[in-house]
Image: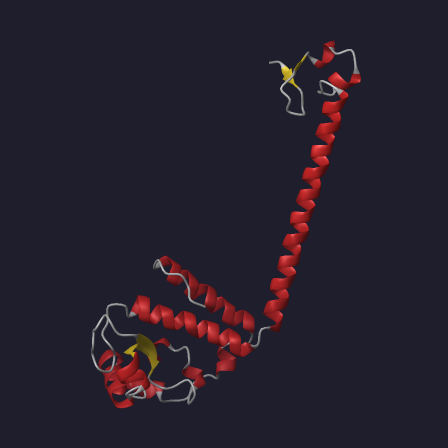
Length: 201
């Protein structure tokens, strides 16, 4: 198979053993081709170095951003993912947990039976979070606590309602650091993507 000039000009060269000058032995048809090829290699190397530096810079920015993001922001982002999963995946075909409406035209929330404010340790307890119509029950109805308790008893039993109303590990114990929060965020992002949804957070 005939050799071709390394610079890409497609000039055919004789076998290296038959070449009488160093340029053609190295695989180039002329000094210009050699110079052009070396220049192209330097430019490619420089481009790769720039891309590598940019990548390293972006990684440093991401690390710094993680380090400076307050815990409250991490918890809020996790809550957004869980709420999205509850309403649009787990309870997608379920009615409102407290009034039973199934109207497709209204907004639904991920309603907590025991509020995040009163018991932050139950903030991410999935049996404390269910699909609930936004206006009638969750907002204007203040969560409809009595109806919600009946729903919990019917779905999980009285013993589980008693457990929800009992003591629990503090949120700081459940999520001792940002890495533990991020681990659950990754988990719920995957669940949402597997369901064909784009995570909202």
